[in-house]
Length: 241
Ligand code: GLP
Image 1 (cartoon, rainbow, N blue to C red):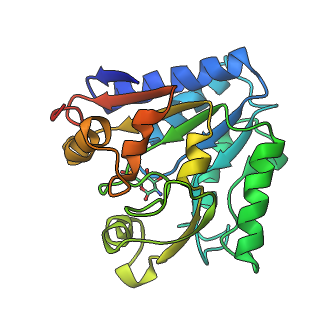
Image 2 (cartoon, rainbow, N blue to C red):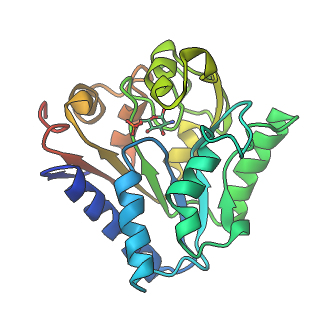
């Protein structure tokens, strides 16, 4: 386990973008696992800049996002598809057919989940998975007490997660209570993982994830067992370590 403690959000974002960029430069057809939320926004900005400056080419890069809300259409501004287009994909030269997010509107959810896993496999597996962390230790939308062996599946969101994510919606009632998420097993299957965390609100859960007992009560604690995991955390998020 590698833990890189940086000064602030900006430094975290730059370091993370450097790691992603070098992954792509060394392997132009890399398969990236991507995350949403506030945390990776700065990383996406830096990667966009690298592209604009001609340093990174996304032509052959494939991406698989961790999760998508159940029941939200791609065109819904709260969907993770919309987030990814707005904050990253529309600014770079990634090919549309190389972008993958679970379809939250799929008629047959089970089939959608099986197909998502298959697509990751067909792409050759994930080279580098980016993660944020929820206040309760969730990664993707794998809430506490979900089985570690789960693969892509429909999840019921915790009350706290719904509350935390309501900041992106007009009201609490509008927040979906379900999502399709890669499972812990899918995430652990990535060859390399990069978890980003910033700010004092993440300090306690970062402590539990890195130093605590490995338990499904803190989904991120399983990452302690991954052979190639790097945490980039700012001073505030690292303050309990
Ligand atoms: C959401 C996402 C996670 C993300 C988490 C933390 O619930 N499904 O992938 O890591 O929130 O978000 P933030 O980075 O905004 O703190």
